[in-house]
Length: 591
Image (cartoon, rainbow, N blue to C red; front, side, top):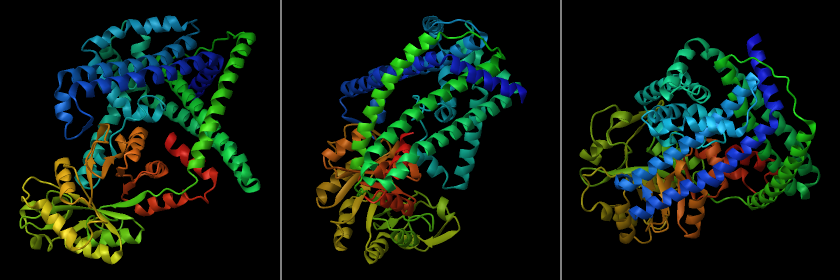
């Protein structure tokens, strides 16, 4: 415990003593990130689209896109740029911490030179070790080192959500996650060892990290947990104090609430950026101190005049940033006064209280207030339509059998089970009749297995027309070819394409809407689709943070397993909501 206290004191002491250095380094990192990394990424992607002739990339054309030799070359270049950025960003922090703890005078240029000498490993097979290391560390880095390039990288939720639907999927996910976490944690010191020791390779650094983890890993993790806990408590305290004036003024002087909210949000945004930057500095200090046992407190002092000059310049910059952010926030918050009209779409019904894709789920979704209920249909062997998602009956019914090889009457006798609920498999006819009785519209996703009849689309259009729902229902599928044909066959029907990924312009897509996995939705895409009058449905949003974000951006629809939660969030966006709640909601998805 005494050593842990010493290390924490050392970290805080060094960060305070070299605060000007850290301000400069973090300012340069952010500047470099936004002025070089982001533009280079955009440029490389535009070049890839130009050489291949594509306007956008989806799961349908990604294989042919990646098969182009120039595309693979540009992807390699992009990966090298990102790896180098991570290397220099984290390497600077580790070398600064090492020199500070040893009491060694240093200059940014000498640190830059030291890092440059190791760049040679990036042009050898050794880079494979670094790629594996970064990949293993991504789950930890996105949590422990926010506001870096790693923050936005994660496993798409639809993959994990599908795995968690079955017991075997849960076991597989738990096993793989456990292995990756163990390997990632044991490799956590690879980069500090590699950057600090001048003559060591990436592979040797990885080996040393594994050796160290046998004796000092627990101590390191405890210290990092202490740092993170202290950071979160400090952040919570500042948030409470920072929002107190807004809380009071909204109730005493409502006319000043909008301006105060904009200034409050700007203050908290700046504070969060500073605190997360300090968190990175603290982590680097702790990791270096543990790895090299450098418990040496230097007594050198910084010239007061030097600090005063730098602080004067810094104060001017901070004031300018604060004013700009306040103005932007006031405009943004003013737009959010009006309630969004985002449709709440219940994913496969209300699966929290019923089996997916069953009449029971439909009834409960309607009762929860869903605007639309999304269901999956497949064509049966006798040419009718059954409401079922999977290709086989194994997961929900515990039986062998391929759905498209069975008749509708056979399927309707089967009972499906999930989380203690049970129900019967139903036909599309039953769903439409019940949906009309409940006065709720359907979003029908057509699953194509490859053995459908030639009259697949005419049969579907005929059925929807017979129930007089062509003008009110939505139909989507992952097959863009089928949906293009369907739109020509039924111009009044709202037709969409489901994408697991898409990058690039979507304005030329000949349908009414696209349904896109949340990881690939950008502000540019939202604005582009809104200008072209094409709707965007985002799937599958099951976290409050994601629902808050996309409802706040007023996308056309959010597909969720929790329609009641989504409805509550949409309701809270009404014009009667206090600005304090809007500020807190904004912070939830910005950071």
